Length: 598
Figure 1: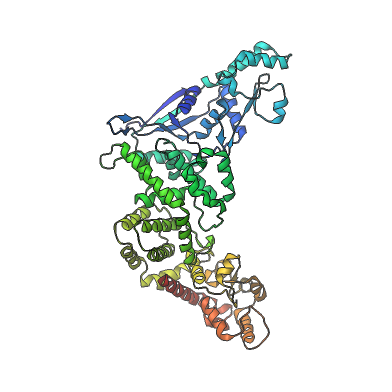
Figure 2: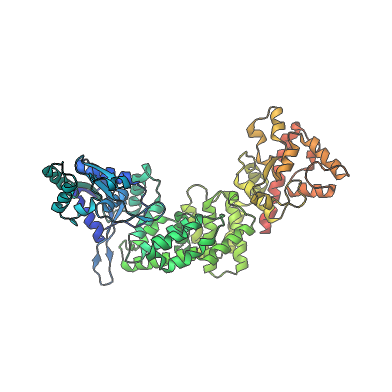
């Protein structure tokens, strides 16, 4: 029989609040922002007052850590479910400020009507109403004597029954004597199991992941600076999307704004590039994988707990070292020079717009590789070459699609233990054989999904090679992508519809090119044979019809840049299937040439 790894007990609300005040139960300040609206806090107070159950909170007792002198340091409880309720209690009962969705510190004051025995969020109308007591906190915490509160209320409301008011306020004070259930997970419970429990518990609420659990673990440890490190991760990911949020940190979190972390991320206040906007999960995963040469986040929880993987004990020195290494990794991630140079490398490969990058995991590992090679003192030119190739290889092969942890772990261990050039060559031989270029890639291009990763690589190749848009004299594909240009059907959609083709047929990526919007409109629903004959006339001195190209050699060069077979000059809908098959081969050849040029 499996031993039960948790205990279930009822505790007084005042006991839980005392644990929070004393730091025995860790509620990180921004583990997740307080997402409840104030009315939910009001409802929680009402439920307690009425004697209704408010559910269970779940905490995990951190493993005991062995100190240098041999003593065991008992771990704190880490709250893994119930943060919103416990935060609501401390806000309403203790009057503590909470951090809202905008990361601003706010005070939630709950008012109480002793006559009707109702709670409400304090607002200007209630503040002026003598039937309401503005704030329940000073009453519950004994900051105000109950007799004074009763006297003051009865002086303003002479028609009320004094004894009833006193009884009602006594009941209000007794809220903290009500009970809440605590499920406490054992400190020796396997960390992966705790992570699984954490994710399962929260699967019905705000979507959480293993990274959320790691973040909670980090934030709970103030002794090694985890709480500030947690803020750095969170604020960086927030600023990368919303630079205008910067003044809020300086104004509402003066403690953090005086740290080195704040100075390290301050460059984001004027940064508007959107190619790589990492979430807190991305920051955490990249920093951990790069610095620890491990890919599984459950290992990070173990290391931050001080786990010795050989002895299975928990040791203080391992915990201290792990927090220090994670700090180094985070600071390297958020470093302005590192981040901007990495973005430059990705853009130099032709990925000039975030729409060309569908896989955040692929982008994350490319940054891991950049940081790792830099740490290993590779020459900058080699770093650029290797990161470009690995990034494109990963997209073409779908290396990090789905669950990436195992392949992250496999790759980072190889990268850390051998010459990367040799490892890259081994992976290329295994994944980019002749069969890949002549069969597998061509098959991947047989899709109607316009955001197909392999088609995006083709567009990136066009950007890197400075290719022009279809029928453009000088405007490049890069220009069109950055300015949100039009995707044109070489066999116009309206034309193929008239001959009965379905959406999945005419929307194939092998039928797409980037072009100027006016060219797209002018071509309209004409068959290729018709509008290409107009182009031939235009190149033989005729009037301008489509685009700005007026020489046949330039037209053919433009077609080559866009991988358009010359057979299109004579094509109607009957040759459509032959056309897309031929174009897929041309696109595959171009991608191969592009990859080899990186």
